[in-house]
Image (tube, rainbow, N blue to C red; front, side):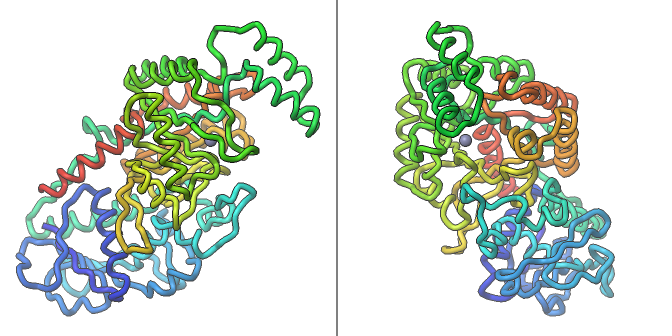
Length: 483
Ligand SMILES: [Zn+2]
């Protein structure tokens, strides 16, 4: 049995406990928190977190805590040691991640990976650094991981792997063996959730044609010929699949890979400039019903203004539930608008179980340094949130609109990220917008999606949607607790 002794600064013990619980969830190990040596058995593996390990005379892993007050208000340093990003508020002088100590079979971590994980998981840098972009989002360019070029490295998973390895060595010396609960379904090595945001109405519609025309006339943006082409095509009432409402094409190709994705739908326009203007009319309703009746998931794409407004989110959720006659439990905010302090609570209060907003618009990677589902931390009430986060890792627009990659270069970036996730047995959430099917307006986007699906298939990933993977993680947690 693994036993944890949390002995850091008293006011930050709930935070430290939260990190241990999150890391042990990822590892798939049950651990018991203990206060003192009573009841410790010879074969137990002990992790001590604090400054006075000598109080406990058993074999153990020692993680010396650092000053959490400093972490709360300062940006840390990062140094790569053996390829592992070590994050610390001190100057990092060590050259090893951990060392064996004077006591035989004891190990000492050479940096405070618990505080570092808390810093990443709770997006502390977004609280410290209040700069935001034109959409009110914390930009990847502002992040410390951008500075060190490690946004695509799942740091918390790597830390969990280090603790697993040391624990195995410690227990082996006791002739014990640790039972890790399998991480993914059917023993798959890593998982991928496929998702699509519906940000546009139909391409061939009068609404879209007039918007394009107005943009050309008022803002001098876009090509007049395109607007007129869309308007004339719309007037002919084309009934073949609309390239922006390409749901059937996505389902068809995903079916070949035995995967069923999540489609996120906007149900209310709350910002004239940034929100989609489509409505759930009869056509869209029947398409959405077709999506869920075939086993794909429908989630809410929370409107631009909704990211910290529970009543707005509740209204939008109800509207979608009425349209599809079933419960909606997954959400992603439009424009990835997100507030560290308020978004998770607003989503939780409106009855969502899973969110997948936590990614960057500008680049692919792991905004919270983690490639796994996790429960966010509610700092105000010092508790774990009930809503689960499945962090967004790859968005089509980040690759093409922000980084301007060619299809080949974009595929290289996606493969590198997937390889990183495979190495740690993690989760990658992918987002391809439904308009990406239109080769004319979004050249190469669909091709990259097909290539990515092929790559995932060749790697043997478990490919599914947000609620399937979220529910799996919930059930797995119950299993871990039973062991
Ligand atoms: Zn959107």
